[in-house]
Length: 367
Image (tube, rainbow, N blue to C red; front, side):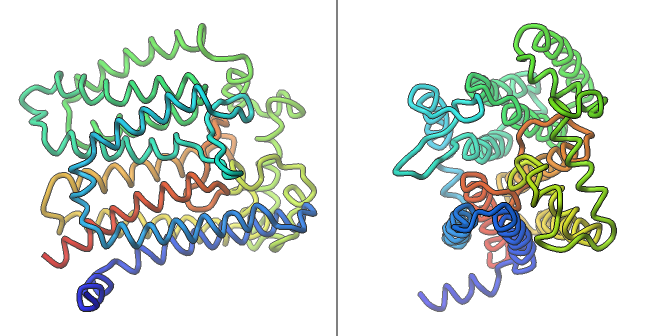
């Protein structure tokens, strides 16, 4: 048994793990800084995040030492369980900031949509690894899209437009990666353009429209709909090259910047650690992407390849949207910065997903 563990440890990708660990440490340092600066002497959020990080890494190692084919075999069960969670949260969930998307169990709050992101990656990897999409592309486009659409619709009912958009984006990224012909992609673009116009007219609430319009001119209403973005831009610009120092960011420490531990933690890093801090964070993300994608050449089965591609697509899209939100380039849709923002559900789900990636890499090295 110990010999087997030694082999697993020897063949694990420790550079990949180090990149994840350093991103987590960046997040913990800023969560601690904001909590201390805002007078939260009990450091409750920081302590919670440390617990979530510890649990997440324990699951990461457990799953990385588990054969990833377990997840392939039970992908349908994960999908059904995920859909059931989304139905139950609509019935029994608690509402936060207008979204009924959380379970509260013994004082611990869990957001199931974070688990659903992992489920979507697993579902698409399993489906595309077994389907001959080049023979019946339209059929596979409809089936894969329909599977994601069900989860997407349940998320929108909460309503959580940002997470729903993310699920759709992962599916779109996967069908591009898989290699569907351009005519299908063009047709999809036209269909979604029509749906988008209809959603703007019928579905989106006024505050959601305000968030989108704020992208084009955040200074138009700096005290209301554009306030968060305006403060984030000020924080990013004031950091300079080396930043003001941890604990000395005026926007975050004096509570000018809302959601500073979650949606806008990138702005906090920029203000307190400057361009150097941002460069380090982006470097660690780059290492994570490079090591994962580089490992694909040694992976022997399609499921492993598609899962890694799906997982990296999800993390990249989350990172891109979050940074775009902070810089005023994209609407504020409540997407956290992976491994950095405060939030136990996102942290644990992402570490579980990366545990599967590590399992795929590990077994491609020892077979």
